[in-house]
Length: 186
Image (cartoon, rainbow, N blue to C red; front, side, top):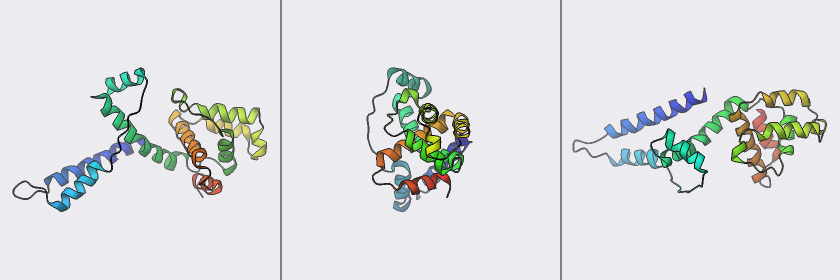
C-alpha cells in the first residue's frame, strides 16, 4: 500500500514536470513563471552529504540501480516520505499512551545500529516488561503489548525506532505528553 502511494506521488510529480516542460513560447523558451515553478519542483533545496556505507550495501545499490549515487539518492529521499506515511496510516492510533510511554522509556539511551534496523524494539519491549516490569509502571498489559509489537512489520518497527530516537534526540525541546498524544491519535 505504501509502495503504491509512493509510486502515485512520483508519477504525479513527473506529470507536473512534463506539463511544465510543455509551457514554452514559440521560440521554445520556458516562461519565467513556469521556469521558477519547475526549478522549485526539480531542485528543491539540495544538501550535499557523503555517507559512508558498507561494501555489501554499496554492492546492493550497484545491483539494483544504474549507479551507486542514484540508488543512495533515491532511498535517502524516499525514506522520510515512506516513514511519514507509515506513521500516519499504519501506526498512529495503534498503541495506547501507556504503551508508547513504555516504548520510549525502555529505549532511553539505546544506540541504533543499521544491521539490526527494525529489530531493536521487539527485544527492548520484551526485556523491559519481563526484567524491569515496565508494564506495571505504565499500567499496560505486557502480554498484549508484546503481541502488538511482534505483529509489526520490520519497516513499522524501524519507523517506531526512529520515532523513539527522535524523541530522545530532542527530549529537552519536546513535551512528551504532546509527542505521545500525537502518535496516540488524540
